[in-house]
Image 1 (cartoon, rainbow over the protein chains, first blue to last red):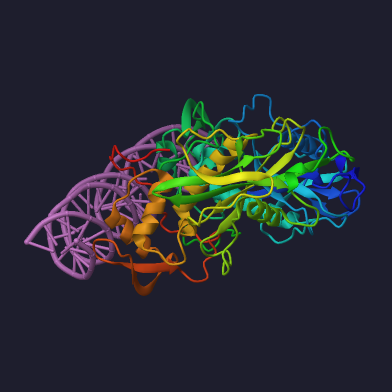
Image 2 (image 1 turned 180 degrees about the vertical axis):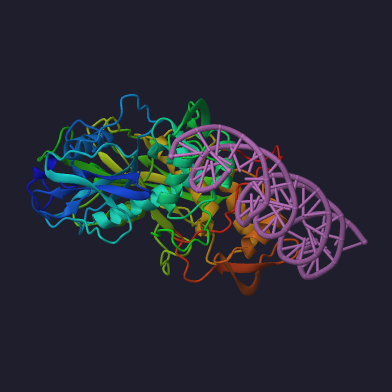
Length: 258
Length: 258
DNA sequence: GCAAAAGTGTTTTAGTTACACCCATGG
DNA sequence: CCATGGGTGTAACTAAAACACTTTTGC
């Protein structure tokens, strides 16, 4: 709803006050590629253009709460029931942009958030946005409103860096997943190909990362894979993988690149 | 000047607008320890308490510009003449805090910045602050106003992480420095002891990090050390050290800890 | 000469890469 | 029984940690 709000330009009321928005870089992995959630704007400015979901922060709410609210309003995405911050839904602050030269209406501050989530069912449009949809990252086809191209690039770069030394790649997976699924996340986010056998050893051998459930999954061809979940009590922000899962550049010319 | 500004509490004017401040975590290395710059507040709230330098963002200025202005006003610290962002002065955005439950006057957003700088001459007080001074990080003696303890901790953690894979440790050194000075920075920031010989090899052998000046420095005892500068054209934010200078924990019981 | 710090060489150890090989399932 | 993917073993390679040793200064 919020994108209707302030009558810009200029500083409303007191000096030192600014309109503040939140924008969300929501990433997921679908079909082997990294995808970002965008909405089509129904209002000026940039009416009809794609943009990151977001909107003005309301009085009395935290920034994180505002990010979740705008995401839910504009795309229908909500945190899964048991999400205690550990599982398949990770929201963290990215950085703050503005207030100058980013909104034609005047100085606006935007606090960007980064969401890593599994490929949920297709989101529903609502609020100030029509047709929320996933777009593939890095194919050059997206040109977003405001400075959202840059915010998206920053979010993607953050995700690429973070899965290297934190267990956050699991945030792209459902609660229980196979090692191959997890490897697919790394390959999609980094745009590289990883050796399945070495990856398996590294991922399962890293303390504080994966915990076997004992059950098997996968109905495809080949031997069924064991199901894992994130190790219990893992704070994905604080835990550090030792040694890190380094990006290994393989001589695969067909691998998708950034 | 700015900390006088808005008549809080409540939302001034339009919904979606908030008073916005910048706060600066300014770190340096002096006497073998990591130190942070704090000021004593002259005004309520938290009058007389130590706090990070900072204040309200003014209309028409960028966040970074506001951070530099408040730093100069309250502490006298300014970027050195030739600082193109490469050398001994690195300012980057840390994260944004608020707007709830952090200022007794009401909801205020604070965008924190992190400054890494060499041990400049002692700063001069001014503006809304009396007696700017350096305090040692991690000795538990500092209890700052607002949520500045947490902001300081976040800044220190960012600095510790960043010098591992970026050339930013050089931001703590003068334009030309010895390998031992650089090692002293790592030891102070990480609170560990590093093997001087292995560190020398790693630092000088890392491509895109150090460049020898050909001249010698240091008048102390022992063999004079070669002077180095940062490799030319280095963007400290973008450059990645490969391999990273990992924190090596040595069994030195006398090493200072965080 | 002696202490102290700079800088180099070498051994040991650990982690990564590449790949051979076996396992378990569907068709 | 064959294709397909899951998972283990292992040798070659590479980087890091530990430390002996030489260099160059001040006193």
